[in-house]
Amino acid sequence: MPPTLKSLLAPAKLADYGYNRSYERGREYYQAGAVLRLAQRGDRLSAVVAGSRDYKASIRLSGSSLSFSCTCPADGFCKHLVATALAWNAGEAEALGDLDDIAAPTEGPRSRQKKGPDIRAYLMSLDRERLADMILNQAVDDSRLRDRLSVAALAAAPDGIDLAAFRQRIDRALEFPDFDYDNPYWDEEDPYEGYAEQLRPILDALESLLDQGQYASVAHLAEYSLAELNQRCLEMEYDFLEAEEMVDPLVSLHLRACRETGPNPEALAEWLFQLGFVDTASEFPGLPWERYEDLLGETGIFHFRRLLETEWRNLPAPPENGRGDRRSRQRLRAALLRFAENDNDVEAQAAIIKTDLSDQDAYLELARAYSSAQRYDEALKWAEKGWNDFDDARHGNSNLRDFLAEEYRRRDRVHDALTLYWNDFFNDMDLSTYKRLTREASRDQDIWPRWREKALESVREMIAESRKNPPKRTQYGFGSFGRQTPDNSLLVEILLWENKPAEAWDEAVSGGCDENLWLRLSGWRERSQPQECLPIWERRIERLTRHANQSDYAPAADSLAKLGELMEKIGERPKFIEKMKTIRASLKRRASFMRELNQRNLP
Ligand SMILES: [Zn+2]
Image (cartoon, rainbow, N blue to C red; front, side, top):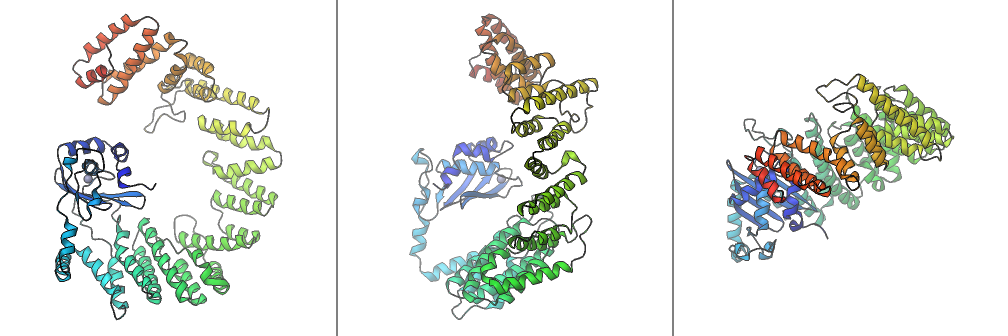
């Protein structure tokens, strides 16, 4: 079943949407009655939520997910949206339109439902003259409504569409929103968020023109819109994600129109080439020219490809670093590679890739191209070159490493393959590099035990070494070991992952490990040796109650419950009661901590 407003706004889910306590704060707002004027029409909700000032919160179902907005400065699903959703769940929305809209969201006291007057029935009873006046009066104050109506009116003109007037509307729809730089609520994160929505009335109007069979006009206007959007992109200095959302529906409309008009293939190729590869702003996402292949036909594709190839030949050498016109180069390269790939022409692919070998990805691409042409020796040569020419082994491209390892295995050079993973592990010892090494070495029988011994030996040496020279605490953490004090954590982690809890326990006892690992060890040990696990929980309780932060109360109380359970098992209930007395006495002023203790029936 597709998600509904009811399933997406279920109270249990709301806590996941919010963050930074917006759920708790939202619930407080709701309970304090801050949600005013909650209205619903179909899958759209809107409310005014009173806070330090009034904010307008809107939630709607779009497709299978929620879209939402709030006029407050917070990001994401803020407390006002949480409060709005809770009020809706309690059936507090006033329905605009059909009363079915407000089918009780939860089984609750029906008496709280506000049916409200039936506005729809009232509107249906008015004559058209009166309705038109009402809407026009509204449009005077609401420029977005005015734009919508103008575009719809242009598209519905009985004596054919006025293309010049419609193009003006497109220009307006693509104008950037005005920013009020003095407004403290101005969202600096992405001032263009919602820009794509401005195009909605245009898309709707083009859709209705298609329905009327005005294909040539739609093709022209879609082309115009795409060109204008590209112009707007020229003004952008950074990634302009909204543009991607806008190109796709415009291209879909353009394609539908072109299928009816049957454009000249060479002219179409010319257009795709100019807008997609030549005049393209670097923030313009380009045109998905592959979707036009059937329309281009053989003639169009031949022409298109020739244009691309000429442009490619005339391109200056790739920029050493920095962006330059890297993007247009990338676009051209991707299109040409696709053609060469379809031709199974590996030399053509290689020639294109070799024009710029400034990163490891290019070598991987080259190696893959040769490999899929079954020219494995060249594949190996390029993969090795890519791997060795970039000597920063730590940040090597992991796909290139995997590719190279497979090429070694193809030649039964298992040791060479494993050495790649060994170096990764040795340079960066942690559970993930160890897991990868294990996985690779276990592919061949009998090899792993020897490699494993060597690996664990290296871990021990690394630990001994860092005990001698403990890593200095830096602003960013604790050096390459990544832990506060050098202990046996990594060994314990590895052994637990290998499902060897007894060995892991011994390593923890002999060299220490971090608290989370101790807790995992306790989970395994406490059944047979509860006595030995007491110190784990005592240390944790000591740590959690030392500063007595609010957020530590619940885990501290849980740990005390656990400790009580273990002590009871070994007949030390009286001692536990004594301990609880001390704890309660020393923290008696922390009322909510006492509440946590009582909730768990602790003595
Ligand atoms: Zn808000």
